[in-house]
Length: 403
View 1 (cartoon, rainbow, N blue to C red):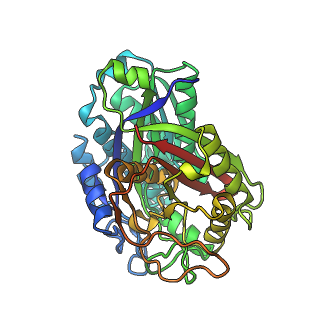
View 2 (cartoon, rainbow, N blue to C red):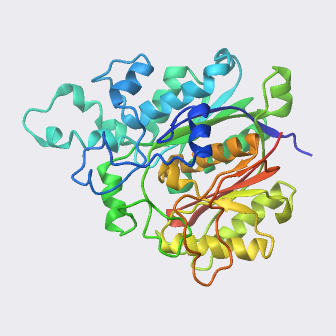
View 3 (cartoon, rainbow, N blue to C red):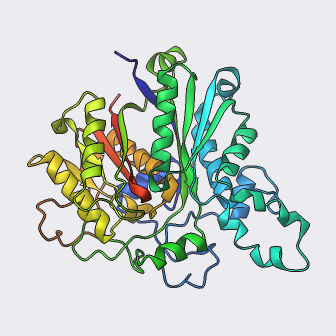
């Protein structure tokens, strides 16, 4: 039997706050991080609620001891640096320098959040020289490279971009590299910042709700966008025990697949979601009845919730576990969604509570299932399933188990 891959450190920043304490407090009090944006420069700033991190770019730069302007770091990268800092707060950073460590990062729109604010300067006659270096930040790997350099992580780095399943796929790659002995440990996760490009793009698809999103509700109108970054440190159980590290969870199973159905819509009856969940549970050596909680992808869009709901009903039949979408708390954080939702699920498992699905009122027509709408305390959560389903049919399901 392959050795267990475990989680030994977590770092997170989102609309709910910074670090474990603020996130758990928000989840326990059913407090959403959604509001009108303060930092996103958009004509829609008073029309759409978003999950915006409550720190300006200057705040984030100061937290990382960087110059507060003209530093070449986009908001995407600053969010990621801050999350990695949270991850390393109780970890000897020398571990990353002395032993083979991978940094696997996910991103979808790179530094668009910063570059779009400089566009008129780029095409004008008096381009500011200090802005020119931001052009290259459009590459999704820019944040990966800068984070690796800042923390001196080597010898392996990679950038994953598979839409909304990006950071979930980053976790899979890290798991596989450790299992195959290529690295001793891996820091895996993802980051994305709000941008006009993203908001306008989803709005053009008629996928954005101007009010609070309502996953799995009959009257759902679309998603709310968010931003943030999250990372997990993965290593073998033996490695964790060797250095006396606390094991936060076991990363026990995973699967990914592709619908190949449509560029933006899932297969209508959830065939891809069904297959991915089933294979992840099987890889973990579990049965469907072992799953205590599902953190659903649950975007509150018409197609996704219908498709994912049908897949859950088909796979779990009459024994559907507690499930909810946590996107009403953070917004849909795109590349960061998979890891942020895994982190929130791990927090719930550690402290024995089920995260409620906010804003739910009416069960979807033709379905027997409905999400958990109120906080459930003192629940023995042994295994959690976290779903991330992205554009292009990129499906990922992850299983985490109590240590």
